[in-house]
Image (cartoon, rainbow, N blue to C red; front, side):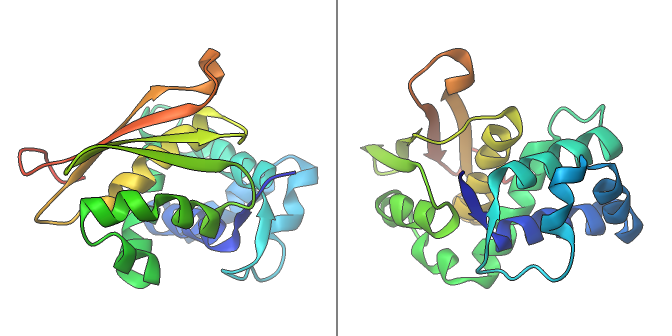
Length: 188
């Protein structure tokens, strides 16, 4: 069973509490299916591993409870998490420029996921394709990933735009995203 780092779960909780209010986290946890409650009982350590299924269930329940009519809910959650990681962790130091960010992508992937693999194809100095293989796809995770990469890869000087161009949910062999940096883009 795939896992994500506890920091990803904590960032989702922080998104819910900061954007919708602290009591909303308890509402989301109460609405989770019973088998998913364990992840949210007690302290969550940033470096711990948490089941991907629990993380996805939390995001899906948060959307259904708090943003059922917000089509960009997962992307906003991801962008929020990406901004947090860029600002507070060593991951932000690895993505100082597009070339470094692309080269470091697989390492960053392994920092947050215990399964699957990320392959990167550089298309130019400010453009690349990222492909995720052997990792369960869900609408919540795919949209969150695009937002997280935008938040992590963007700076005020050089905003990043990330769009999914292929998804395993649509029968493709991987989830593929196109990343482009440019001054003509609006910052996420």
